[in-house]
Structure formats: C-alpha cells, structure tokens
Image (cartoon, rainbow, N blue to C red):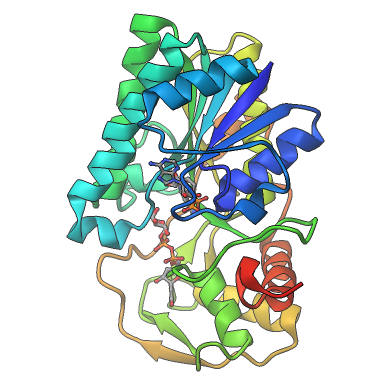
Length: 329
Ligand SMILES: NC(=O)c1ccc[n+]([C@@H]2O[C@H](COP(=O)([O-])OP(=O)(O)OC[C@H]3O[C@@H](n4cnc5c(N)ncnc54)[C@H](O)[C@@H]3O)[C@@H](O)[C@H]2O)c1
Ligand SMILES: O=c1ccn([C@@H]2O[C@H](COP(=O)(O)OP(=O)(O)O[C@H]3O[C@H](CO)[C@H](O)[C@H](O)[C@H]3O)[C@@H](O)[C@H]2O)c(=O)[nH]1
C-alpha cells in the first residue's frame, strides 16, 4: 500500500515525502508543478496533475494501491488571499472538495490535511490551543477552516478519517541538504533574513518595534519543517491505529521575536545581517504561539529542533542553493 502526497513537490510536502520514504513507505507525489519543483521529489514517483482532476486522481489511487493521502496542495499567501479570495476558495475549498470525493470514492479511508494557525486569527489567549475559537482574518485562513469542516462531514458520511494539522510558522530546511524552500516568491521572515545575509536584498525590514513583547518586535512560533514532516508520519500512524478525526496544533510552544531570529541567523551565517526598523505591518498580531499538548498526547510528537537549528539549516540550504533548485550543481 502507498501514500499519495498532494503538493509533494512543494516545500513541506517534499520534506514529508522524503521522510515517509526514509521510514519505508511507498510514496506517490501528486503535484501540478505550478509552484512545486520536480527536483524536490528526489526521484519519488511523480504524477503531474491537478487535484481537481477526479479521473487522474482515481486512476492514480488504483494504479499505485493508495490507501492514505497527505494533502498539502493549496495556495498559502494570506495577504494575496485578501486581494484574490476567489483563487483561494476555488483551490483550497473547491478543488479540495473534488479531491476528497475522488479519493473516498476510490476507497481511501485515511487523510492528513495541511491546516494552519491562521484558522484562529489574532489569539484571544496564549498559548493558542485547539479549543480556541475560529477567527480567520483572511480568505486563506477561512479556506482552511472550511476544508477542516468538510472533512468532519466526510468522516460522518463516508468513514474518511482525517487529522488536520494546524502548523504555526514553518521554517528551516532538511538536514539532508537536498531540499529546502524555493524562495522566489516568499514573504516570510526566515527566508528574507537569509536573502539579507546573502546580499540578495540590502537589508531585513523589521516590521514593528513597539509591540508589547520582550524586545518590541513580533513573536511567532517557528517550527522546523523536518519536525512537521515527522508529525505527518505520526498522524498517519495514529489513523492506522484507529484514531478518530481530529485537529492538532503543530508548534514548539514557545515564541521567538524578530530580533531573536535575526541574531540566530547572524550566529549561523557569520554575517552581520543589516536591518532597518519600520512601522508595523498591517494585520500582524503582536504574538502567536501554540499549545502543543494535544500533539504530544495523540501523536507522541514534540518539536525536537529549536530556533538555532531552524536558522542554521535554512542557512545551509540557501547559502549552497542561492537560486534555489536552479542553482547550478
Ligand atoms: N509554509 C507555511 O508556513 C505553512 C503554514 C501553514 C500551513 N501551510 C500549508 O501547508 C501546505 C504546503 O505548504 P508549502 O509551504 O509546502 O507550500 P508550497 O507552495 O511550497 O507547496 C504547495 C504545492 O501544491 C502544489 N499545488 C497547488 N495547487 C495545486 C493543484 N490544484 N493541484 C496539484 N498541485 C497543486 C504546488 O505546485 C506546490 O508544489 C499548504 O496547504 C499550506 O497552506 C503552510
Ligand atoms: O520582512 C519581514 C517579514 C516578517 N517580519 C515579521 O516576522 C514575523 C513573521 O512573519 P511571517 O510573514 O514570516 O509570518 P506570519 O506569522 O506573518 O504569517 C504566517 O502565519 C500566518 C498565520 O498567523 C499565515 O498562516 C501566513 O500564511 C504565514 O506566513 C512577523 O512578526 C512579521 O511582522 C518582519 O519583521 N520582516
């Protein structure tokens, strides 16, 4: 039996597909390659297609004996989603709906879903636990909440059991040195710090220095992509052991400030990364970090890699692949 990894040519999907294979699983990557890279699949079987192509999905499930799905394929830019909500609902909800139908009709009974802490919006209490009320502040966060809700009904109607994993801030790169984030379009802090360290941008802009945090800059819960990958493997095992449909936070439980991230990157790179202070970025909460006790209880998971490891692995990847997968070998 094999695992279908949708979006497995993308950042987190590639790391998860790599780990599944290292753990002895048969993996089939399914990706449109719109934002993913063939190189990131590291030679795993790859089906190039759209998740909404029900015929191709069903044929893939049948041909490879797929019995579980890990569903990453989606759009993820919260800011863009505010400008283009239709794009996000069409793919993250509509196409996800088509995928869920196709795989359950083809006999799949276990699905692990990429959700996000954006389903909570600005936290009303910290750390954010899974009982925190939903309050998405972008169509992106809303689309993930809607997909989670759909999955609850697919369990009731069809017995498709699922785990929705709500990631906090994914960052870092594989310890293998073979895969990492393709950073051409990223707006996230860690890759931007790396760009500044490599001189690809003149400096890192620090958005907001007057937050009520220990050094005035924003606090986030950075979680290593290899730790996220490990949680997906554990979530599959949880379902295979009879676990019920649920949603689980994936965070470290501690937050780091922007200045702490920059300092860690200076230490890892040896570069005195230039920064410039700027006003707050609209819509950014002061602090977001997650309660990860449910992940410990249900999956036996906790994040093993700290901020220094996250930043050092990102530096290893970006400094050796300054043009991502297009870096000449
Ligand atoms: N990166 C983060 O910080 C973060 C945080 C929370 C949640 N997530 C979620 O995790 C998942 C993976 O994120 P990522 O950072 O790896 O993103 P990514 O953009 O690197 O990967 C997404 C992949 O999905 C593919 N894809 C998109 N639409 C598709 C379609 N219709 N059919 C087939 N393939 C399609 C893309 O080509 C790409 O390879 C997403 O669902 C995202 O919302 C990411
Ligand atoms: O150039 C930059 C970029 C970011 N930041 C700061 O760094 C922190 C992290 O910012 P990111 O953009 O990396 O991540 P966010 O926490 O803003 O956003 C992430 O979490 C959101 C949910 O809260 C959404 O899921 C979103 O897609 C995901 O990238 C924030 O305090 C932000 O203000 C800077 O100071 N300078």
